[in-house]
Length: 354
DNA sequence: CAATCGTGGCG
DNA sequence: TCGCCAAGATT
Image (cartoon, rainbow, N blue to C red; front, side, top):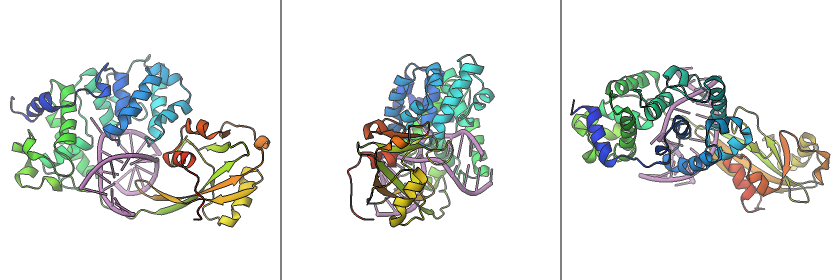
Protein backbone atom coordinates (compact mmCIF):
# COMPACT_ATOMS: atom_id res chain seq x y z
CA UNK A 1 0.00 0.00 0.00
CA UNK A 2 2.73 2.42 -0.95
CA UNK A 3 0.19 4.93 -2.18
CA UNK A 4 -2.35 4.64 0.59
CA UNK A 5 -3.81 7.65 2.42
CA UNK A 6 -1.57 6.92 5.40
CA UNK A 7 1.58 6.40 3.38
CA UNK A 8 1.21 9.63 1.43
CA UNK A 9 0.64 11.42 4.70
CA UNK A 10 3.73 9.85 6.28
CA UNK A 11 5.90 10.80 3.32
CA UNK A 12 4.68 14.38 3.64
CA UNK A 13 5.27 14.30 7.39
CA UNK A 14 8.88 13.18 6.96
CA UNK A 15 9.54 16.34 4.97
CA UNK A 16 7.25 18.94 6.52
CA UNK A 17 5.83 17.69 9.83
CA UNK A 18 6.39 19.28 13.24
CA UNK A 19 8.88 17.28 15.25
CA UNK A 20 10.30 19.71 17.80
CA UNK A 21 7.35 20.81 19.91
CA UNK A 22 8.05 20.82 23.67
CA UNK A 23 6.12 17.59 24.29
CA UNK A 24 8.02 15.79 21.55
CA UNK A 25 11.19 15.37 23.57
CA UNK A 26 11.58 13.16 26.64
CA UNK A 27 8.35 11.61 25.46
CA UNK A 28 6.49 9.63 28.08
CA UNK A 29 2.85 9.09 28.92
CA UNK A 30 2.79 11.83 31.55
CA UNK A 31 4.24 14.50 29.26
CA UNK A 32 2.03 13.44 26.36
CA UNK A 33 -1.05 13.40 28.58
CA UNK A 34 -0.49 16.91 29.98
CA UNK A 35 0.09 18.27 26.47
CA UNK A 36 -3.07 16.63 25.14
CA UNK A 37 -5.22 18.08 27.92
CA UNK A 38 -3.76 21.57 27.47
CA UNK A 39 -4.24 21.37 23.71
CA UNK A 40 -7.97 20.62 23.97
CA UNK A 41 -9.69 23.53 22.21
CA UNK A 42 -6.51 25.54 22.62
CA UNK A 43 -3.99 26.54 19.98
CA UNK A 44 -0.42 25.26 20.02
CA UNK A 45 1.18 28.70 20.29
CA UNK A 46 -0.95 29.50 23.35
CA UNK A 47 -0.11 26.23 25.06
CA UNK A 48 3.68 26.23 24.72
CA UNK A 49 4.62 28.70 27.50
CA UNK A 50 2.01 27.18 29.85
CA UNK A 51 3.34 23.70 29.13
CA UNK A 52 6.93 24.66 29.87
CA UNK A 53 6.04 26.29 33.20
CA UNK A 54 3.69 23.47 34.16
CA UNK A 55 6.25 20.72 33.50
CA UNK A 56 8.92 22.64 35.40
CA UNK A 57 6.66 22.86 38.44
CA UNK A 58 5.05 19.39 38.12
CA UNK A 59 7.67 17.19 36.44
CA UNK A 60 5.98 13.90 37.30
CA UNK A 61 2.54 12.46 37.91
CA UNK A 62 3.48 12.09 41.58
CA UNK A 63 4.39 15.77 41.85
CA UNK A 64 1.09 16.76 40.28
CA UNK A 65 -0.92 14.43 42.49
CA UNK A 66 0.65 15.81 45.66
CA UNK A 67 0.35 19.52 44.81
CA UNK A 68 -2.17 21.96 46.33
CA UNK A 69 -5.05 22.43 43.90
CA UNK A 70 -4.62 26.21 43.98
CA UNK A 71 -1.08 25.71 42.73
CA UNK A 72 -2.33 23.65 39.80
CA UNK A 73 -5.02 26.22 39.00
CA UNK A 74 -2.57 29.11 39.15
CA UNK A 75 -0.48 27.41 36.48
CA UNK A 76 -3.66 27.08 34.41
CA UNK A 77 -4.73 30.67 34.98
CA UNK A 78 -5.43 32.29 31.61
CA UNK A 79 -5.74 29.05 29.66
CA UNK A 80 -9.48 28.67 30.21
CA UNK A 81 -11.66 25.58 30.59
CA UNK A 82 -10.55 25.18 34.19
CA UNK A 83 -12.32 21.87 34.66
CA UNK A 84 -9.40 20.52 32.66
CA UNK A 85 -7.00 21.51 35.43
CA UNK A 86 -9.15 20.10 38.21
CA UNK A 87 -9.68 16.87 36.28
CA UNK A 88 -5.98 16.71 35.51
CA UNK A 89 -5.10 16.58 39.15
CA UNK A 90 -7.87 14.12 40.00
CA UNK A 91 -6.61 11.85 37.25
CA UNK A 92 -3.03 12.16 38.48
CA UNK A 93 -4.13 11.07 41.93
CA UNK A 94 -6.00 8.10 40.43
CA UNK A 95 -2.98 7.06 38.38
CA UNK A 96 -0.81 7.13 41.48
CA UNK A 97 -3.37 5.31 43.59
CA UNK A 98 -4.87 2.76 41.20
CA UNK A 99 -2.11 2.25 38.62
CA UNK A 100 1.01 2.56 40.76
CA UNK A 101 1.95 5.82 39.06
CA UNK A 102 2.02 4.33 35.54
CA UNK A 103 -0.49 5.22 32.84
CA UNK A 104 -2.37 2.18 31.54
CA UNK A 105 -1.74 1.38 27.86
CA UNK A 106 -5.41 0.63 27.36
CA UNK A 107 -8.12 2.71 25.71
CA UNK A 108 -10.91 1.89 28.18
CA UNK A 109 -8.77 2.35 31.27
CA UNK A 110 -7.46 5.67 29.99
CA UNK A 111 -11.02 6.83 29.28
CA UNK A 112 -11.95 5.96 32.86
CA UNK A 113 -9.73 8.83 34.03
CA UNK A 114 -11.43 12.23 34.41
CA UNK A 115 -10.81 14.55 31.46
CA UNK A 116 -9.71 11.79 29.08
CA UNK A 117 -12.22 11.05 26.34
CA UNK A 118 -12.05 8.92 23.22
CA UNK A 119 -9.69 11.09 21.22
CA UNK A 120 -7.33 12.00 24.06
CA UNK A 121 -7.02 8.36 25.12
CA UNK A 122 -6.13 7.45 21.56
CA UNK A 123 -3.57 10.23 21.35
CA UNK A 124 -1.84 8.94 24.47
CA UNK A 125 -1.86 5.38 23.14
CA UNK A 126 -0.40 6.41 19.78
CA UNK A 127 2.05 9.05 20.93
CA UNK A 128 3.34 7.53 24.15
CA UNK A 129 2.89 3.79 23.62
CA UNK A 130 3.03 3.60 19.81
CA UNK A 131 -0.10 1.51 19.93
CA UNK A 132 -2.62 1.59 17.09
CA UNK A 133 -5.37 4.02 18.06
CA UNK A 134 -7.47 6.62 16.26
CA UNK A 135 -7.78 10.27 17.17
CA UNK A 136 -10.36 12.77 15.92
CA UNK A 137 -9.60 16.38 16.74
CA UNK A 138 -10.53 19.58 14.93
CA UNK A 139 -7.72 19.20 12.41
CA UNK A 140 -8.57 15.61 11.56
CA UNK A 141 -12.26 16.46 11.28
CA UNK A 142 -11.48 19.15 8.73
CA UNK A 143 -9.15 16.94 6.67
CA UNK A 144 -11.62 14.06 6.58
CA UNK A 145 -14.71 16.20 6.04
CA UNK A 146 -13.04 17.56 2.92
CA UNK A 147 -11.47 14.35 1.70
CA UNK A 148 -14.77 12.50 1.88
CA UNK A 149 -17.07 15.48 1.38
CA UNK A 150 -18.89 14.81 4.65
CA UNK A 151 -21.84 17.19 4.85
CA UNK A 152 -23.23 18.62 8.05
CA UNK A 153 -21.85 20.18 11.18
CA UNK A 154 -19.42 17.87 13.07
CA UNK A 155 -21.16 18.75 16.33
CA UNK A 156 -24.05 16.53 15.25
CA UNK A 157 -23.67 12.97 16.44
CA UNK A 158 -24.52 11.57 13.04
CA UNK A 159 -21.80 13.56 11.29
CA UNK A 160 -19.34 12.88 14.08
CA UNK A 161 -19.84 9.13 13.81
CA UNK A 162 -19.20 9.23 10.08
CA UNK A 163 -15.97 11.11 10.64
CA UNK A 164 -14.89 8.57 13.26
CA UNK A 165 -15.48 5.79 10.72
CA UNK A 166 -13.26 7.49 8.15
CA UNK A 167 -10.63 8.17 10.78
CA UNK A 168 -10.57 4.51 11.82
CA UNK A 169 -10.29 3.19 8.29
CA UNK A 170 -7.24 5.33 7.50
CA UNK A 171 -5.29 4.56 10.68
CA UNK A 172 -2.26 2.43 9.72
CA UNK A 173 -0.78 -0.53 11.60
CA UNK A 174 2.73 0.89 11.41
CA UNK A 175 4.16 4.27 12.44
CA UNK A 176 0.92 5.23 14.22
CA UNK A 177 2.70 7.81 16.31
CA UNK A 178 4.01 9.65 13.26
CA UNK A 179 0.71 9.20 11.43
CA UNK A 180 -1.19 10.77 14.30
CA UNK A 181 1.11 13.75 14.28
CA UNK A 182 1.05 13.87 10.49
CA UNK A 183 -2.69 14.20 10.04
CA UNK A 184 -2.88 16.90 12.70
CA UNK A 185 0.01 18.78 11.09
CA UNK A 186 -1.62 18.59 7.68
CA UNK A 187 -4.77 20.11 9.13
CA UNK A 188 -2.82 22.82 10.91
CA UNK A 189 -0.40 23.69 8.10
CA UNK A 190 -2.00 22.79 4.74
CA UNK A 191 -5.65 21.84 5.07
CA UNK A 192 -6.37 25.01 7.01
CA UNK A 193 -9.80 26.37 7.79
CA UNK A 194 -9.49 29.32 5.44
CA UNK A 195 -7.50 29.28 2.21
CA UNK A 196 -6.34 25.65 2.26
CA UNK A 197 -3.14 25.09 0.27
CA UNK A 198 -4.40 22.21 -1.86
CA UNK A 199 -1.44 22.50 -4.24
CA UNK A 200 0.88 21.36 -1.45
CA UNK A 201 -1.40 18.62 -0.18
CA UNK A 202 -0.32 14.97 -0.54
CA UNK A 203 -3.98 13.92 -0.40
CA UNK A 204 -5.42 16.24 -3.04
CA UNK A 205 -5.44 13.47 -5.69
CA UNK A 206 -8.12 11.59 -3.80
CA UNK A 207 -9.82 14.50 -2.08
CA UNK A 208 -13.51 14.67 -3.02
CA UNK A 209 -13.96 18.29 -2.00
CA UNK A 210 -10.89 19.38 -3.94
CA UNK A 211 -12.11 17.55 -7.05
CA UNK A 212 -15.22 19.71 -7.07
CA UNK A 213 -13.38 22.85 -5.96
CA UNK A 214 -15.37 23.01 -2.74
CA UNK A 215 -12.72 22.45 -0.10
CA UNK A 216 -13.58 25.71 1.63
CA UNK A 217 -17.17 24.54 2.14
CA UNK A 218 -16.16 21.78 4.57
CA UNK A 219 -16.73 21.21 7.35
CA UNK A 220 -20.12 22.88 7.62
CA UNK A 221 -20.16 25.64 10.21
CA UNK A 222 -22.01 25.52 13.47
CA UNK A 223 -25.56 26.85 13.32
CA UNK A 224 -25.46 30.26 14.90
CA UNK A 225 -27.66 31.39 17.71
CA UNK A 226 -27.84 34.61 19.59
CA UNK A 227 -25.54 35.09 22.52
CA UNK A 228 -27.27 36.22 25.69
CA UNK A 229 -25.95 39.33 27.43
CA UNK A 230 -25.30 39.01 31.15
CA UNK A 231 -24.10 41.64 33.59
CA UNK A 232 -22.37 41.56 36.94
CA UNK A 233 -20.77 43.81 39.50
CA UNK A 234 -17.16 42.99 40.30
CA UNK A 235 -16.14 44.68 43.54
CA UNK A 236 -12.60 45.73 44.33
CA UNK A 237 -12.87 46.01 48.09
CA UNK A 238 -9.70 47.62 49.37
CA UNK A 239 -8.41 48.32 52.87
CA UNK A 240 -6.21 51.31 53.84
CA UNK A 241 -3.06 49.24 53.31
CA UNK A 242 -4.03 48.44 49.74
CA UNK A 243 -5.07 44.84 50.29
CA UNK A 244 -8.02 43.55 48.29
CA UNK A 245 -10.59 40.90 49.16
CA UNK A 246 -10.73 37.78 46.99
CA UNK A 247 -13.21 34.93 47.13
CA UNK A 248 -12.78 31.37 45.95
CA UNK A 249 -15.44 30.47 43.44
CA UNK A 250 -17.49 27.28 43.67
CA UNK A 251 -15.90 24.22 42.03
CA UNK A 252 -18.34 24.08 39.13
CA UNK A 253 -19.63 26.73 36.77
CA UNK A 254 -17.79 29.60 35.19
CA UNK A 255 -14.20 30.02 36.45
CA UNK A 256 -14.80 27.08 38.80
CA UNK A 257 -12.30 26.79 41.63
CA UNK A 258 -10.55 30.05 40.75
CA UNK A 259 -10.22 33.13 42.92
CA UNK A 260 -12.02 36.26 41.90
CA UNK A 261 -13.26 39.58 43.16
CA UNK A 262 -16.52 39.39 45.09
CA UNK A 263 -19.60 39.64 42.88
CA UNK A 264 -22.72 41.59 43.73
CA UNK A 265 -26.23 41.26 42.34
CA UNK A 266 -26.24 42.69 38.79
CA UNK A 267 -29.70 44.15 39.41
CA UNK A 268 -28.28 46.59 41.95
CA UNK A 269 -28.10 50.26 41.10
CA UNK A 270 -24.79 52.02 41.64
CA UNK A 271 -26.21 53.92 44.62
CA UNK A 272 -27.05 50.63 46.34
CA UNK A 273 -23.55 49.15 46.18
CA UNK A 274 -22.36 50.45 49.53
CA UNK A 275 -25.22 48.97 51.48
CA UNK A 276 -25.12 45.69 49.56
CA UNK A 277 -21.41 45.44 50.28
CA UNK A 278 -21.96 45.88 54.00
CA UNK A 279 -24.73 43.31 54.01
CA UNK A 280 -23.13 40.59 51.95
CA UNK A 281 -19.52 41.04 53.04
CA UNK A 282 -20.13 42.26 56.56
CA UNK A 283 -17.81 45.22 56.28
CA UNK A 284 -18.41 48.96 56.49
CA UNK A 285 -18.10 50.61 53.10
CA UNK A 286 -16.56 54.06 53.33
CA UNK A 287 -16.44 55.06 49.71
CA UNK A 288 -17.52 53.89 46.25
CA UNK A 289 -15.81 54.68 42.97
CA UNK A 290 -17.22 53.42 39.69
CA UNK A 291 -14.93 52.35 36.87
CA UNK A 292 -15.36 51.82 33.17
CA UNK A 293 -17.21 48.62 32.48
CA UNK A 294 -16.05 46.16 29.86
CA UNK A 295 -17.39 43.15 28.04
CA UNK A 296 -15.87 39.71 28.27
CA UNK A 297 -16.86 37.39 25.45
CA UNK A 298 -17.38 33.71 26.14
CA UNK A 299 -18.12 31.06 23.55
CA UNK A 300 -21.84 31.27 24.18
CA UNK A 301 -22.59 34.51 26.00
CA UNK A 302 -21.26 37.96 26.71
CA UNK A 303 -20.56 39.13 30.24
CA UNK A 304 -20.72 42.83 30.93
CA UNK A 305 -18.43 43.45 33.89
CA UNK A 306 -19.05 46.61 35.90
CA UNK A 307 -16.18 47.19 38.31
CA UNK A 308 -16.52 49.28 41.44
CA UNK A 309 -13.76 50.12 43.89
CA UNK A 310 -14.93 50.22 47.47
CA UNK A 311 -12.82 51.29 50.43
CA UNK A 312 -13.23 49.93 53.91
CA UNK A 313 -11.59 50.22 57.31
CA UNK A 314 -9.03 47.73 58.52
CA UNK A 315 -10.42 44.28 57.80
CA UNK A 316 -9.40 42.67 61.07
CA UNK A 317 -13.08 41.93 61.48
CA UNK A 318 -12.73 39.23 58.84
CA UNK A 319 -9.88 36.78 59.24
CA UNK A 320 -8.52 35.01 56.21
CA UNK A 321 -10.56 31.95 55.45
CA UNK A 322 -10.28 28.96 53.12
CA UNK A 323 -12.41 30.70 50.55
CA UNK A 324 -11.92 34.36 51.47
CA UNK A 325 -8.60 36.13 51.71
CA UNK A 326 -7.14 39.64 51.93
CA UNK A 327 -4.16 40.00 49.63
CA UNK A 328 -1.90 42.63 48.21
CA UNK A 329 -2.34 42.88 44.48
CA UNK A 330 0.90 41.16 43.58
CA UNK A 331 0.00 38.29 45.89
CA UNK A 332 -3.43 38.13 44.31
CA UNK A 333 -1.95 37.96 40.83
CA UNK A 334 0.05 34.91 41.87
CA UNK A 335 -3.15 33.01 42.59
CA UNK A 336 -5.34 31.29 40.01
CA UNK A 337 -7.38 34.18 38.65
CA UNK A 338 -9.67 34.45 35.61
CA UNK A 339 -8.20 36.62 32.87
CA UNK A 340 -10.65 39.53 33.31
CA UNK A 341 -9.91 39.67 37.04
CA UNK A 342 -6.19 39.72 36.39
CA UNK A 343 -6.75 42.61 34.03
CA UNK A 344 -8.85 44.41 36.59
CA UNK A 345 -6.33 44.01 39.38
CA UNK A 346 -3.27 44.79 37.30
CA UNK A 347 -4.74 47.51 35.11
CA UNK A 348 -4.64 51.23 35.68
CA UNK A 349 -7.24 52.76 37.92
CA UNK A 350 -10.00 54.25 35.86
CA UNK A 351 -12.38 56.69 37.39
CA UNK A 352 -14.80 57.49 34.60
CA UNK A 353 -18.44 56.82 35.27
CA UNK A 354 -20.12 53.85 33.69
C1' DC B 1 -28.50 15.30 22.65
C1' DA B 2 -27.70 20.05 23.43
C1' DA B 3 -25.65 23.07 26.57
C1' DT B 4 -21.69 24.27 29.06
C1' DC B 5 -17.05 25.50 29.76
C1' DG B 6 -12.30 30.47 28.38
C1' DT B 7 -9.34 32.82 25.98
C1' DG B 8 -6.82 34.86 22.25
C1' DG B 9 -6.00 35.17 17.34
C1' DC B 10 -7.56 36.17 12.95
C1' DG B 11 -10.18 37.64 8.78
C1' DT C 1 -15.40 46.08 16.19
C1' DC C 2 -17.27 41.44 15.56
C1' DG C 3 -18.12 36.62 14.61
C1' DC C 4 -15.88 32.38 14.29
C1' DC C 5 -13.36 28.85 16.37
C1' DA C 6 -9.13 26.09 18.04
C1' DA C 7 -4.93 19.05 19.60
C1' DG C 8 -12.85 18.04 23.31
C1' DA C 9 -14.95 16.33 27.59
C1' DT C 10 -18.67 16.34 30.66
C1' DT C 11 -23.36 16.69 32.20
